[in-house]
Length: 249
Image 1 (cartoon, helix red, strand yellow):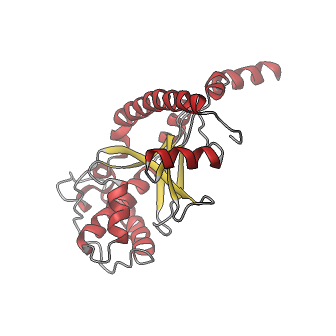
Image 2 (tube, one colour; image 1 turned 90 degrees about the vertical axis):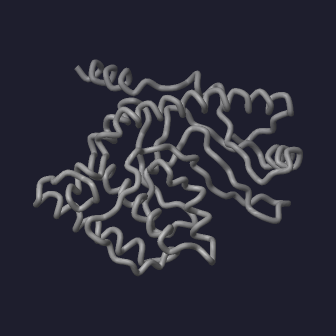
């Protein structure tokens, strides 16, 4: 969105972004709550998790072996440097998926430190009670609790494994226009995160507007903006597929 806004247009864009972003977040949360049973680790790992019912022995054993390899390759590397092994049965404190803000840093001329940017149309999926912001703080804390870091690493890797194991879930959410992707985030090394998008895009305005806004607000954060034109021009994937099929006859 490389164009200059006046302050009135900026205020209007902020209001539109908040309204649309809140509605999209509500819809994505509703879908995730409905589909949450498809990614419950208890049904995949069975007796390898504390309190879980006994599952299919061979399948559960195979799943835990794969997860153990994923954990060792990720947790043993920077920035975690964990040396703990996975004890069986593994304790999972939460298996309810929840959406957390998708954030990243950008460097702007005239600023001494990076600006933290939030997307109103994309979210990180984690388990309830394991906020991504808290995870980031634990990693940066030189006096962090190793046990707490271990819990966060296990829960985020567990969620990734469960979602990645269910490709039908991704296709279903894509059909609902909330696509799933897997990404690596700054500060988290090679750990893969599940990201849920939406049918609307958001952008950063020009740097001058960002600098003015953050100076007036006196903070170090900024939210991407949604353009009304992007909402008006939203494509219908199902319609497009049907029209192409008809045209091919």
